[in-house]
Image (cartoon, rainbow, N blue to C red; front, side, top):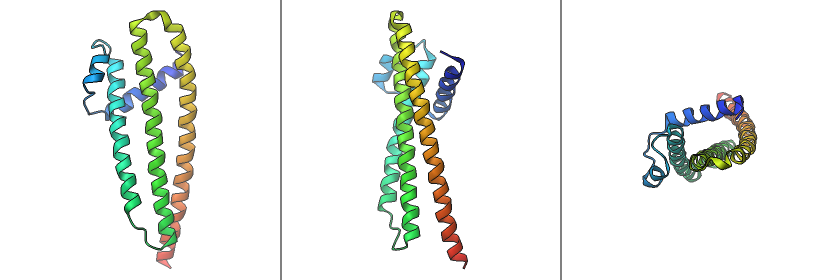
Length: 161
């Protein structure tokens, strides 16, 4: 694994693990060897992302049910809010899937070191796709935030006139 890939993996694990507070569940505990803290951290991160994905679904439902009235700018702002939550959910799904693949790959290596080179190549390919997907999501988030700021400014200017 190259240095940048290792930094990305460790950074992802640490960031997600800090937020992880839920128990990993009986099934995951059976899969995780007790002597591998990296796999344990990945499992906790996966669990927390699952919780986050569930919570954001509820928030999106709340936004959908809230009435923006007949004001087109408020309706646009509400649609941007919903788009932001949907984007956040997609990001968490991409991150969760990345952590699942990483955890499963590490578990396979622990069980059988024979496939190590092949698994490394597969993981590196996946990592490249993951980094690109995350960058695409960041760009989309930037565009949404810019548009949100524009609409907010219009609403405030209208209120101050």
